[in-house]
Amino acid sequence: MKKLAFIIIIASVMIPGISFAEPILPGFPGVNLELQATDNPEDVSVTIQLLILLTVLSIAPAILVLMTSFTRVAIILSFTRNALATNQMPPNQVIIGLALFITFFIMTPVFTEVNDMALQPYLAGEIGQTEAFDEAVKPFKVFMSKHTRQQDLALFLSYADIPEPNSIEEIPLQALVPAFAISELKTAFQIGFMIFIPFLVLDMIVASVLMSMGMMMLPPVMISLPFKILLFVLVDGWHLIVRSLLISFN
Image (cartoon, rainbow, N blue to C red; front, top):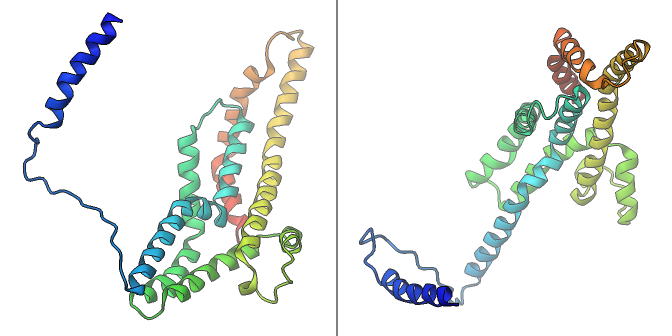
């Protein structure tokens, strides 16, 4: 209790000195944020639009991940690492970084179309904000609908009682985005299964050899790991994996 009282006394003496001390950088500009009432409806509209924009930007990374090829690429690269059983090698940072750059490469035509049809006309003042959003969404809808299974899209359309659209532009995003995401998950798991097969066969061969030699106490994974890495290097595995990814999006 005496120590606690001593600390309180020291703090009560030091805090006022700190709070009223001279600033380190005199004349440093301050920032004053005030909320003022206005009678102009345009000011209110701009404020609401700004809040909506900040909200959209906060969830933009998640939206872009689910509306691009990132999901399939990241899962397949992770499956490859797990099939090799290399204990977090390559690390997660390398997997995510490589997935991002491959995604940018695959999505370049879509991004270019969005820039030409929506962003540049909007910055030039040729179209409004709503029209720019509609034009920007169209290339993403075309890309997602191309890689979305009909039964996945029908699942969300039927659940929300949305009538069957006559064109891609009429498909609502709230149904297309989750349908595209689960379609990408299925495709990624199918490719991941094919990646696991040769490494599984190698594990079975090593396990059979060890059992025939009576070395049952030696973990087969420890022996098969160098052979897995050697096989993956000899067939130029990363080139084949990335090539398969690029072909799957054609």
